[in-house]
View 1 (tube, one colour):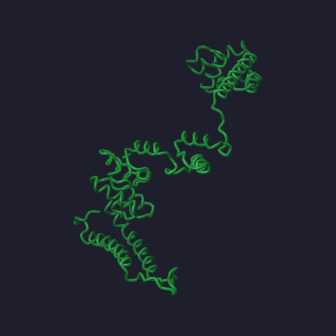
View 2 (cartoon, helix red, strand yellow):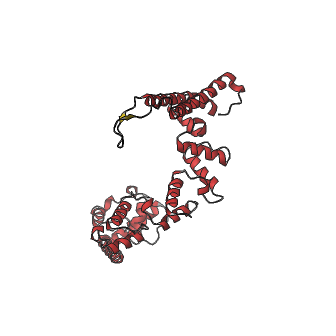
Length: 326
């Protein structure tokens, strides 16, 4: 039944037959009503459908619809019973399974089936809760996932797991992807990370590596990303990529300066006195002020800042005649 899905609708329909007027129903409703009444011809205009229904509704009456509804419901109950009969038996709780049953369940779910009872239950429970780890999966499953992602699927298990994590995070290098598929892999993650898509494979790989290591600069990002940042910060949208970078670089320099200040303050902090397990007197850790680590951090941050500042100053001096690439 398409329209008369329950006995109440049949009752209300026949309660006041005079209320059955064409404008009360849309064409789809009239098609369903006609189908429930057994009208063979369901095509035509709304007016034609209404005429066919009105002609047959008094002839067949409410009893016809109620009987048909009972038949439909009985058929539905029969189908539901058939589905229930053919359904697999309900899975026992893991706590009630013996070790062999747990191993079979783990294998069917492509999990490791080794270890003790608690190990297997933990893997199955993690999978059910959506927090399973690759380390808990079978080697066959890990290999299949690498193959699906066009990644190299040979090597020791621990290498395969690490490779799958890298591939999933966009951190795989060229050696991890099968020959001829690395450019497609790069393009996918360049788009995913909103990085600049111009240049060759080597340049794209550099941008992606910089992004993953947290050292990407504004010039590594796509026009769409830069435009969105400019709009979010309510800066001027006119001028295109060059103008956007000139507005955003000072903000990046300010952020680098702040991070450098925090890092420098941490390096200058007074070292704590520690006691060695194997020495009878306390000794102090060497101050990191002036150390190689401190010099490298300051050099990296200052170098980045000076490089960015140089770009801005050069661009402002040369204006339209500059050959500087952003």
